[in-house]
Image (cartoon, rainbow, N blue to C red; front, side, top):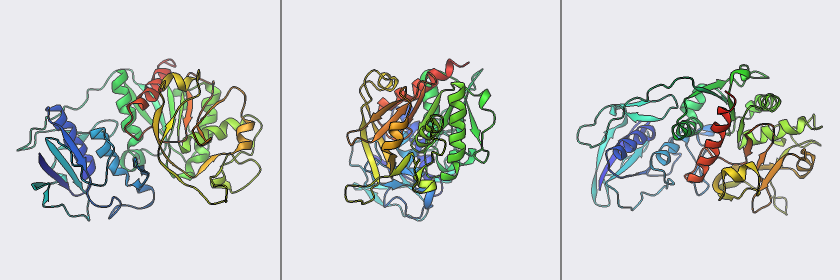
Length: 372
């Protein structure tokens, strides 16, 4: 096993390109990020990647899982691979040896890496001394589906890349051409919704975007536009449904504080102690629902939330809405018959390594095709 360490800014993103290129050449590779993720990294929204065991890690860690398809561990994995690629961000030192093998240092900035339209890295030229297979830039396809993503383009490309990358993978699997369209969150109703074929409401901690998410969800419900809510986006979708069903003052407690029409309220145990749900849980959809057709055997979904659908809000939902509850009785997903795909998950299907989650993204794009 050869051990290669990429050191410096963008190490994780470039490591992902190297691992993908090694795989294209027939080699096997594992990835690791030594030390405690978060040391020397941005705080706040820079640490929203939900690791398999529940910790919040810097979003750059997403790329290491993405490239290998395996849950990223803090420890250096003791597995048999042709290559072990270490990612060493600024502020951390690379080990000199791993498993008695010397570590080959490569300054991250020297790796010839480019990005496709979805921000996914690929190796654009050969690297001396490595069998990594360079990958050509993906050729553009004609007549793309326009998929809206609420939020600033820079945020999704540089800070929280999981949504774009996962969307790109779904486009590849379904042989569809996709044009991401970023909807500015500073407008009460995002413009350009009429030109879209589908809309994604992302998760994360950007609560300032919730009013725009709710407005966009309401417009999508009116038009029958395929709609996919991820974690916070699921909360916004649910709130939009309730506002259309008699709860005109519906709000998230996290934003407005306690009140009579609060859709999602603070999770607490029987003693009143606040809870925070982190890690993976198994989602088993309600039988005969649209979600059950997309996830016939369920899926492992990563969680990072402190608020859950309140009982009064659940009771106020229209009868046509289907709630999918997890083993703890918490609403894990919601679907509305407003379109061929109107689903929200109280979790992060854009993260995690369970291949079953691909069915969700495929179903979303298949519904978008029907709007062309």
